[in-house]
Image 1 (cartoon, rainbow, N blue to C red):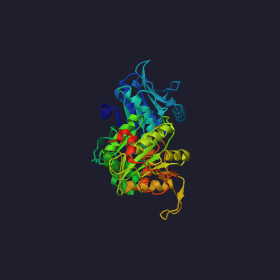
Image 2: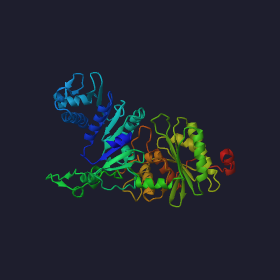
Image 3: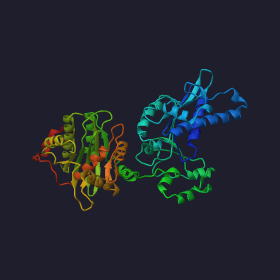
Image 4: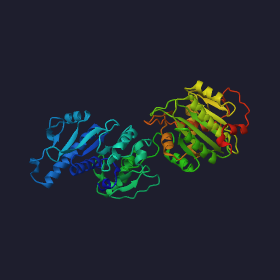
Amino acid sequence: MRGVSRHRVIGFLTRRQYGKTTLAALLALKKMLRTPGHDVVFGSVKLDLGREIVRKESAALRKAFALLAPGIGKSVRLTAVDGKGRSVDSVTPDDWAELYETCRLELRLYHDRNTYSRTKVVALTPDAVGETGDLILDEVGRVRNFAEVYEAVKPIISSNPEFRCVFTTTPPPDDTHYSFDLLAPPLDAVFAVNPEGNWYRSDLGVWVLRVDAFDAAADGVPLYDDDTGEAITPEESRRREPDKDAWDRNYGVKFVIGGSSAIGLPELDSAQRRGVGQCRFAMVNEDGDLDDALDFMAEHIGTGPVAVGVDWASSQKEGSNPTAVTVTEGDGEHEIQRLVLTWKTASPDVQRARLRRIIMAIASRHRGGRARRLCQDATGNQLFCRDVAKYLSGLVPVENVVMSETEKLPSYDSPVSKKTLLGDRYVAQFADNRMTCPPERYFREDHRLPKKIKGLYVCDPLADGKHGDTFDSGKLASHGLRSNRGIADTKLLRVGFTSARSFFPRFRK
């Protein structure tokens, strides 16, 4: 309760069945009692939890009234507001369900005959969580599109300095879930057992109160044996649990790293830490953005072999996928992604011109020469990719990669698609600690989207267009450092690098 007073956005991370909803009800009542005409919006992922918040508020009010003023119940009325003014006691469970499903379930606390504060229960979706007031979002770790929900609530939080937003949850089962990034502690955090729980600040700046089973037991809230009902220690509870990862999430309140993401978080974190000051990710919205990115690359690129990977997209809508380009320099078995770019444009001319500038910038480095290969995903854009190969004729060997094509390899039981093969090799570079990558958060989030399920790489897009595009361009660049086949059937011309530098004046030096 004190933490909510100190911080406007807060996470309450606890073991299962600790009392998150009860505390949420008390927080809502506190604001309703203190501020006439105030709204508290309770977002619930489950119907039964939506009903529970109002029931707990009602019970808490009755208890408070009984304690504060004997007999006050005769002058105070609790009603379920559905236009009929029925008392809470007369509303059946089916009524609660109907009220919730039509987004009319709320508890009103009247300060006088005309002024009331209320708690309104809504479905935890981007469209439903749109009313202003304090926000209590319950079990956010189980909300499938939580990133979109959070995007919807941020303007509400910023509209009034008195508004608060509370996220209650246990850690999500999938570490690509947005609540993982939003609420997870730093990787090296260590928490001592504390009956008051432990406070920490997440990497995204959210203050979180963490209460695991060990903290709860120290505060007199034990776990119980499934058979006898006898109180047992957290250590004994975990020993008996066959699924240790599930126990660690639900009772140990640990953000279990792994999930189903193709690249593990520790491996990606290590690669990004190495990339600080060496690598850069940039969104290109105009030519000046590309100028700055190429200046950075010119200052940091070395003399090793360089490959470029491109994953094309041809739309500039807000939620569409971007084009992604990765420039990777080889250093023995190690790879350094010097520059990763994304942009959105529907113009083929702009696409080709930007890629040519990148290729010319590489060719203009003092030592090391031009890029050894450009690999582009031609799965659904073979005609355009052939045109790009012709356009860059003489500047770089171009390989058009069709991801659906298969190969027979001794390391696989059956023919494997190039999408799987290149993905496996790229992921292996991270697992073997041989990657250095840009440290920016966009890169991390985009690289955590691809998942490997039953041997296949799949990726669900996010609302802002992220679709693992930098993962795809990265694996193509990695492939380009080693591949010696599949050069596009355009005749390579001999072009002196002096004339190349003349073509692009920014790199004459």
